[in-house]
Amino acid sequence: MEKRMAKLTVVPTPVGNLEDMTFRAIQVLKEADLVLAEDTRTTSILFKHFDIQNKMQSHHKFNEHQTVEQLAARIRAGEHIALVSDAGTPAISDPGFLLVRECVRQGVEVECLPGATAFVPALVVSGLPNEKFCFEGFLPQKKGRQTRLQELATETRTMVFYESPFRLVKTLTQLAEIMGADRQVSVSREISKLHEETVRGTLEEVIQHFTQQEPKGEIVIVLAGIKEQKKSKKATEEDV
Image (cartoon, rainbow, N blue to C red; front, side, top):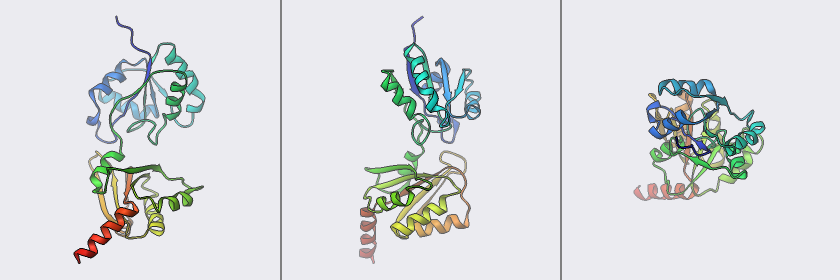
C-alpha cells in the first residue's frame, strides 16, 4: 500500500447548498488521518450528508494559538491532516491562517483545494468592476473602525466586506456618512441557499430596503470605489 504524503490540506466547504462540495474535497475528508473542524457539530452535518466517517478535532479561534505547533509537528511526523471551517475556505475571515503559517515555518507541505468562498459570487453578481478589488473582510467592531473607514473613503477599487445581519444597516449607514449616500453598493445574503438575495443601488436605497426588510443570513457587501462612482455619476449626467 502506497504511503500517503504528510501534509496539511485546507478544504473549502459549501457556503450554502451542500451539493456545491467537490468530489476531491469529499475524498480528502474521507482519507485524511484527522479532520480539524471549526465547529464539529456543523461539520457533522456535512459528514453525514456525504457518508464521511472520520475523526474530528475542534480547531477554532479560541484554541488555535495553543495547538498549531503540536499539529504541525504531527504532520511533519507523517500525518495527513485536513482543515475545514463552518463554511467557505478556511483562513479567509475564518480560523486557519495560524496553522498554515506554522506549517510553512516548520517546512510542512500545505495545499489548498479550490472551492467555495462567499465573496466571489457576491462580487461577480454585483455588476461593479471586479478586475481589481479590495477585500476587507470584517471591519473592526470598535477600535480602529472609523479610522479604517476614513482610509477607505479614497479607495479607487471595488471594496468587499463581510458583515452580520445584525450590524448591516449600521455599517451601511456609516459607509454613507463617510463616502456619500449616492455611492453604489450591492449586498448579497444567503449565497447558494434557497432564499439567496442580492440588492443593488445607492447606499441610501439599500439602507432603506434593509430598514424595511430585516436582513437574515450571512452578508457580503460590495461597494464601488471612488473613481468608478465618479464615472457612473458623470455618465448619468451625460445621459440627462
